[in-house]
Image 1 (cartoon, rainbow, N blue to C red):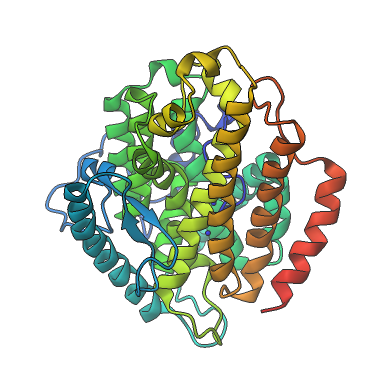
Image 2 (cartoon, rainbow, N blue to C red):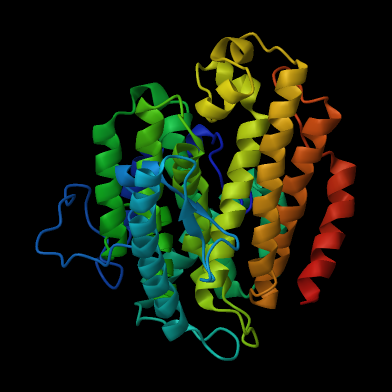
Length: 423
């Protein structure tokens, strides 16, 4: 359910050790020592795949969805997020048709998950792998674990409670998300173009077709085969990176929600098949996927509210322009960092919205497999506390950074663990 923890992985800066160029260098060493076998490792020349059957497109979020937002709540009799809009009736009619399309897509995704859901524990059917290949693959997973331990210590600790197969799979997904974010937020971000992201997406398609360019790719390729993970959320995350290259303002919350889905909500959709739904859960799979989206949105909204000042210094404002105007605020107020009563009232409403998404997410966390709940609860508890810290700073998110202190984490983690044990 999203960056910091795996239903917590929203965009964050990553060390250059995960940069795209570095991964190619590491990959060449890896591929030189690995035969072309079960994992279909190929040279970097094999970028284009021909004759591939199109995969089912999971609720491909395109520019149309700028008109609407997913929202997990009770506006519909369906047990899944519905699309709503603050705009005129004509837009709402479009939103209604998009809602049906998204709902149908998610229903297919949930049904696919149920087909592979085992009634008791995790039963993964492994492909036949040459002994040498398996050793290399284990090294690839271990490398993913090292990256996770270095950059997401709290989450890494939570993954240790998972079964070994789930743990390794989550590491692989986490690392891919970090590397993707590195393309637009890392040290080489100023040189990244839409063409570079196109190549990264082509490489992703190769991974899902069992063609890997380095050891980290190989780990993800193995993961998607074992857990039947769908490619579309990964593609949608890349689309979010494209958006960051050209967009620095969001006219309304529908537009902002789409961005939050791309960069954070997608992570929940990637990881639910790995996390697993509790065997004794009576919840529908689509409701669990809906809750995973809600947590991703909540985490990303929290990131946005925490980083208003930092983003403004980069010329970016990830806040709904129409709501700013309604509050009597402008871009200049943000660039100048004015903490006024108008700003405080505006922030109160934004925090209230984020907390609502956290509340919606709780409905799905309790339905996850017990071995996967702790890191997700930790994500929810700790990230929600960032909102408390923004309030404690008197809504000054221009010059003061809201963060959860170590002693607060020490208290929160046992609480999250206890909640993970109880359904």
